Image 1 (cartoon, rainbow, N blue to C red):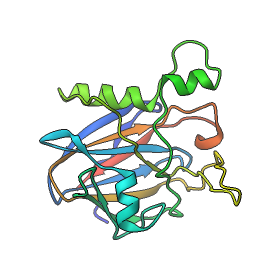
Image 2: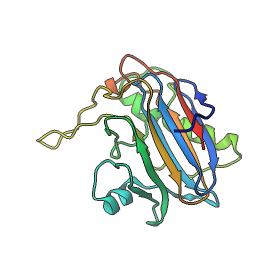
Image 3: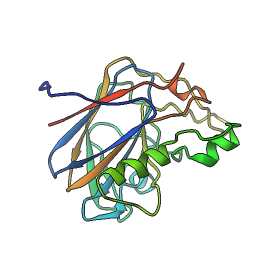
Length: 198
């Protein structure tokens, strides 16, 4: 893989990036323990966004594998998973954390969230969205138990594991280094992640 500049997203924060059709973004789990909530919105209409429920229908999988096309809420291609050096454990079921999630967990006062990161990151590009789509939660381990319950699992990735995504249309990618520190999904705590464009 060609070495390109890696840009840091600080722990518990987010960033939005314009990505032209056929360009790639590589997302690095620098610590090996950090979940990265990932969204893709059509450049000309933020309401036309990558949808995990529609993608599961098209791929027939709970979690995408290299070669899979991720589709929008209008069933149109938006990203393709090109590479995955991790164990392939990613989540497509869990909603982004938000203020009410942390209140339910017992947080006192304000707690950063992926939902806030999503809105803040879009705002820095002069964009907005009325809703937070359900993200592709890269490197997030949510095992489905035999009785149908879900476990908030420990992260199985290794330091430096990466996922490479190719844009199939002009889009805006939003990444959040998930602030969740009240369940085990980010291991011992939240850390920075990195990305590179190619």
